[in-house]
Length: 73
Image (cartoon, rainbow, N blue to C red; front, side, top):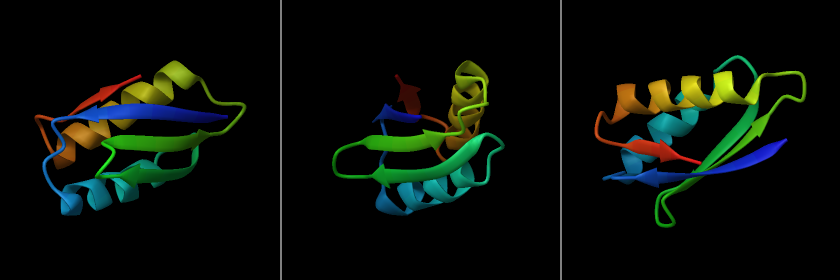
């Protein structure tokens, strides 16, 4: 299932790339794409995964890259 998250306070394209790489490695995620200009992340979550748990893991991974960034959605 594809989910779109808004990224608030994402400051640089390099951080966006690092977030994308980190999210792709998470359990329950099949793929991820971050659009820095649109401040959005599209994540393909495996159908058998708990969406809420994956969302929390995504937020945590993004905070490790850029502590001020918020994942909304």
